[in-house]
Image 1 (cartoon, one colour):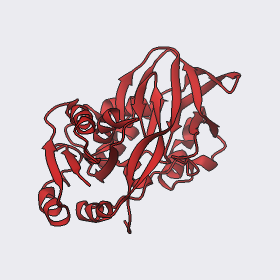
Image 2: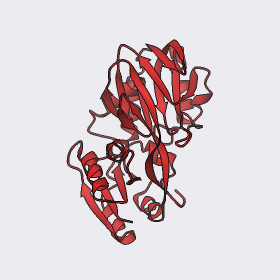
Image 3: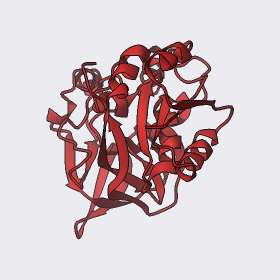
Image 4: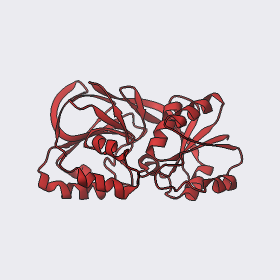
Length: 287
C-alpha cells in the first residue's frame, strides 16, 4: 500500500513534531508532505487520487481531516488519521490512539472500510457540522494563537451570555420552528476530546443525528456543561435528537462550522448525507 502523509505543522499542540522517525520505523512505501497554508491539504489529497496513492493520512486536527476529506470523497483513495489537533473528534470516534506512535502502529495494519460523509450546502464534512453556539465558538477559536482544550473551555465560559436563536427546520416532510442554542449535525458521535454528544451516531447507518439543544433556564448552564463533559448530555430533557438523511434549516445567522472550521452559508442550510462515499483506514489495535 502506497501512503501519502499530509502533515499540518502548526495544528493543535505540536504532537506531530518528530513524527518522521516513527513513519520511517513502521512504513516502507510512503511520501511526506507538509502544508504551508489553508487549502494545501485538499490540493495534496486531490493529487494523491490522480497519482493512484492508496491512502492519505492526515496528521493534524479536525480541520486538517476536513481539508483532506474534500479531495477524497467518492474516490478510491482512503483517508487515515493521526490525531494531533485540539479536539480530534472523528479520530477518537473511530478509535485512534492519542499518541503519534500508537496511532501509527494502529494504522500499519489498518483495514479499509467505506463510510458515510455529509455536506452542508455542498461543503463536505465527516464528523460534525453545526449552527448556533458551537459555530460561534468555532469561529472565535480560529482567531486564537494558543490552541488546545484549555483555550477552548475558556472561550466557552466567556461566551455563556449567548442567546438562543429562532430556527425553522424541515425534515422527512415535517416543518417546525424551534428556539435553540444550537443545532448540531453528527455523522460521528462527539465534538472532540471524548465529549460524546450523540452516542448512537453511526458512520455507516445512512443517517445523520441532528442534535437540537433547546432553550433552557440560564441557571442550569453549569449542570448542562457537566452533562456534556461526562457524555450524558443526550439524556437531558432539553436535548432532542432527530435521525434523518437530510434537513433544511432557515435562520437569521447562517454561520456554520464544518468539522470545527467556520463556514458562512446561505438560507436554507441543507445538510445532506452522502451514503458510502468515503473510504477510511479503520485502526487495528488498542488506543
